[in-house]
Length: 290
Ligand SMILES: Cc1cc2nc3c(=O)[nH]c(=O)nc-3n(C[C@H](O)[C@H](O)[C@H](O)COP(=O)(O)OP(=O)(O)OC[C@H]3O[C@@H](n4cnc5c(N)ncnc54)[C@H](O)[C@@H]3O)c2cc1C
Ligand code: FES
Image 1 (tube, protein in one colour):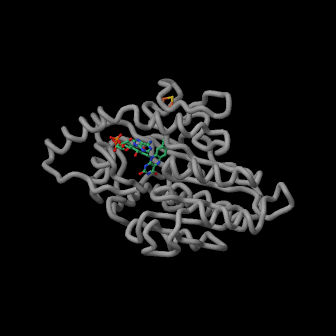
Image 2 (cartoon, protein in one colour; image 1 turned 90 degrees about the vertical axis):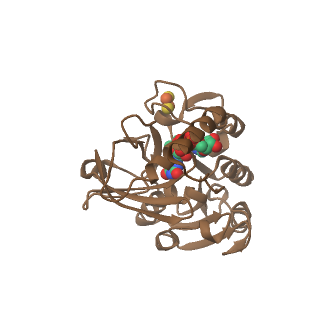
């Protein structure tokens, strides 16, 4: 059982939950994820370790409530306990000296990108962050992201904050103006984390510039240990499992259409599960966020 120290809504339907877990906090590295169970009979779901403090013994998750399991987790209050938290899982991010790196975050992808940006910045890289959301209300952690960024750009789909644009627009402009390190320019790497469709278009935007690209994939997972095959993805000509081979892969090699199709595989079951959950709790349906 894992004590919940804090659980606050930081944007509509997006929650920051801080947990007491000193052993895990010592082992986590940027890029790691954990598997969480709200209760003994709950589904196991993957969530990124969005922040961790080895000294304080705390682990922070950022959770967007999109269905039954995430909804059950965010309903837990400070002072209550999570049934289980397993990790660290996945390979940590390869933190290198890239010179200048672009961190492209979409929606709740800001949470997993934060610890990577923080470590890249700490190790002397020049970090350019592009943080995008549908609207101003859905932006979060601007203070934390700007603190680990040398340049910080916000975009919103509706123009309610920052620039009215998709994240791909400033990404293309920066790559055009400054070029990739591989061809004598400045940008050594482009990270992208967010909805699969956003990462697909970021990868396509970066491709002509010959820059290293990294995406963290959000495949549907079941066991998180490489045994079930649920999270399989196509990377170039190879089949890989996001849980044990990833979650980070060369974005230009990812078959995004396979990932997008596999994310929709259990839509019917997810909807049935959520209807049953609503019937049992008499809660209103979730707002549409992203
Ligand atoms: C390595 C990894 C790290 C992740 N980190 C985070 C995180 O830090 N914060 C966070 O909020 N979410 C994160 N996710 C996504 C999260 O695991 C899913 O949103 C969650 O499992 C959905 O469970 P549910 O029962 O609430 O919803 P479900 O009923 O399973 O699904 C509801 C809706 O969400 C979609 N969905 C389900 N699973 C995923 C998925 N993996 N990615 C995208 N859409 C999905 C479904 O297609 C459906 O439309 C991560 C996923 C992976 C693989
Ligand atoms: S979640 Fe089962 S193999 Fe990855």
